[in-house]
Amino acid sequence: MPYIIELYAPRYRSSQDVVFPMPNWLDWSLRGNSDLFQVVSAQVEGLDDWGLTREIHCYRDLNTRIYEVRRKMEELETSLALLKGQQVHCRHHLDEVHIVDRLPNLEMLARNSEAVAKQYGRRTAPLPHQATWVN
Image (cartoon, rainbow, N blue to C red; front, side, top):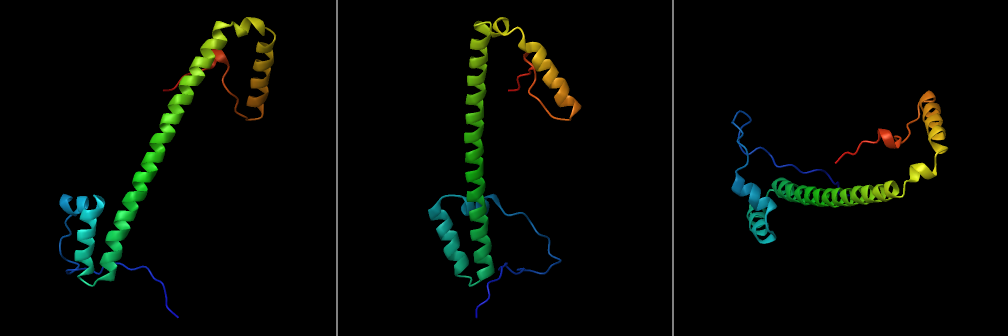
């Protein structure tokens, strides 16, 4: 029965040798376009070192996943900015129609609700005069 284990590239030199960072050209080759990576991959496979082959593929896969997460974060940040803008627009409309003047009895209810929530340690949304807008 075969066993599946993590493969790692063995040390190429002695453990006392100084380890220098990967040069930019190699980093770019591992992260860059597919054709360039295929050339590097073929060269590494020619060394017949499964651990090293696994390491370069792992590095590239992690880079791809990082890119995907960054792209999703940018999409979420764009969506958040859009929602905040829509909320500001909606709030402006509520201010224009003088909603506070139409609901005069609710301010005390909201203040009492806030006091009760504080008493029991619950958070509430800020009252309009307490609202702060964070960009």
